[in-house]
Amino acid sequence: MRGKQKHYLVCDMHNHKIKKTHFDTKDFEIRQALVRDLEVAYANDPDHKIVEELGINHGSVRADVAVINGIMDCYEIKSDRDTLQRLPEQIRAYNAVFDEVTLVVGFTHIYEAIEMIPDWWGVTIAKTNIHGDIVFSTIRKAEPNTNKDKDAIARLLWRDEALRILENKKQDVGVRSKPKVFIYERLVSTHSIDELSLIVRQSLRSRPMWRAA
Image 1 (cartoon, rainbow, N blue to C red):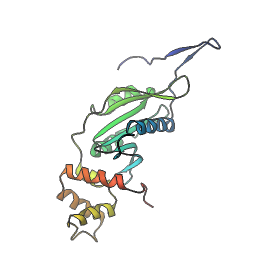
Image 2 (cartoon, rainbow, N blue to C red):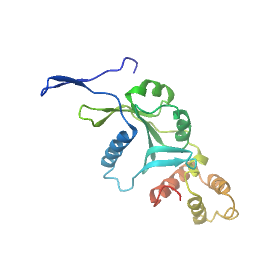
Image 3 (cartoon, rainbow, N blue to C red):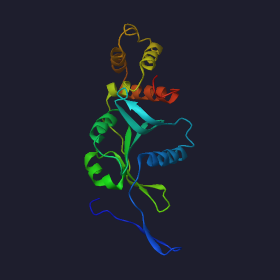
Image 4 (cartoon, rainbow, N blue to C red):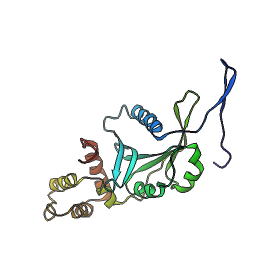
């Protein structure tokens, strides 16, 4: 991965000029292209849901794109025009809740970003081709996260969602009228991490809207 930035030269046979693929990606361009690719990839999976701006820890951090089906995948975008200033905070938040994480990064930040992220994160480079389209190149695939945090997973739920889960298992006695922190504590104490991950995924897939009023 070490080395100088490469430019890919393409000959324009019409005007005899040499053009180069440049690295000046924007967040919204990468996001649009990424979501399109994910929709194609999961077209035959009826249980998947693609979510943009998924709030973690009650919205203090938002994952750019998440795919929820049998697991929860996160795609964090860092375009050439972004900075890596918030990446350490995002790393901590994503490590706590997602089964897999992939950094989708512009070439400008690739070397610095790889030094910052965990080894199990996937890495995909986003760049603009000569036609102005975003293209992706996979550098490494994401591996399973083995250090998720039950409390952080529980906090992906809204209060009424968490309470409804406890009601269904008749475990809501004593917490119905208490602040949501007690509801999350009850969820964590009465479910294994696998059970909690499953019911949270089910709740998120069935959620009719994503931002609380």
